[in-house]
Image (cartoon, rainbow, N blue to C red; front, side):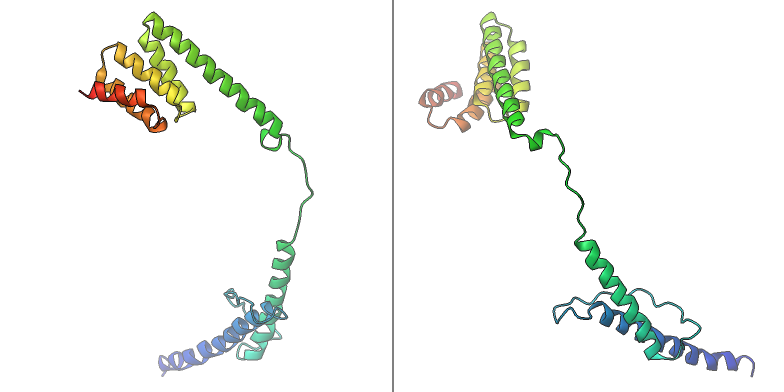
Length: 191
């Protein structure tokens, strides 16, 4: 008989806890959506707390009242957190100073132009490795720069590496579709 008594009482205790929990869950959703209209998205309630001394574990309404109060508080917390603003503070940065960015862009363009001039002088001197180094560095900064591609192609052509020269001429032609001279040069190298 002693073994049967706990088994008989287990469903009673689990139902008692379920009534408070069900009330808490419903109350939490109701409190959260109180005075928010029909479009309120009901949240998933947290785990129901243990009933207080003045609350009954078998009472749905005690759980509902407790859940309603907690849901209402949570809604107020989330509303104040949504619209909480901080004081504005200016940060001196290139992103916020467009004139400094323009100066950087102009300076970069000037450096790229200057490096092309240096590459041309190395090409005339026959220093093809230096031309390749400059062109590859320039293409890392400006990957669609057809002038670097043409200089690189010419350096490969002068060093008798026609396969690489043709590759770079074709890449340059992708950005210079109207250049008939380049088109004819590619055709002659393909033969």
